[in-house]
Length: 213
Image (tube, rainbow, N blue to C red; front, side):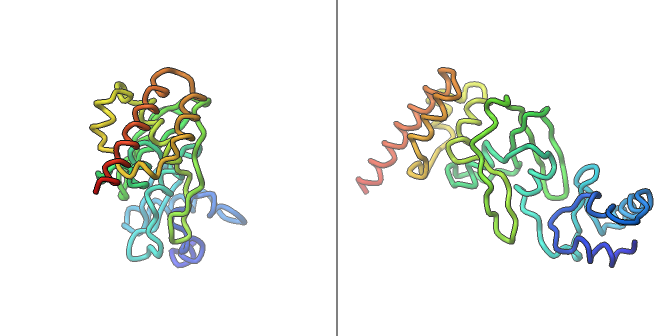
């Protein structure tokens, strides 16, 4: 396989894995040697074992960080601060793409940024949506309500009024407060239930401030 042949196969793919190249009558060892050679030459980025992206100027589609996050750890979804920033529920730019998974925690540094994975129980692994990211890219992302509850669940002290105020939550009218409370109650534990009440109070305060303007 030469590089032009590779471009014909994966040129429209934001990221690709080696399995895409091993169909048919090919020598797997030769394919892996070529991938290693092209990575060293700067034509490819190796994101993790078996997962690659084309490097500029060969890259036609810049992969979205959320798509990369899903592909780096199959069986994960984007949540926590990254999802909250995506929905504009917090004002800060989040430099690390944060996800949750039922597998072990991990962190990956790539040419496209840093990706963090936090462990969550299987019983808590729900509440995510297949989200359109533009450019024909999609990824599994927590709903706004689940992203907030995931953060509260995983972060020590996150259920306190002080912590929730420090998050500087905004645009709380975008939250479905009934869904938030339903998810909090179904998860069990007083921490999430208390936090859902605090967030509802913050949302009402925000609404009153807008009405007074």
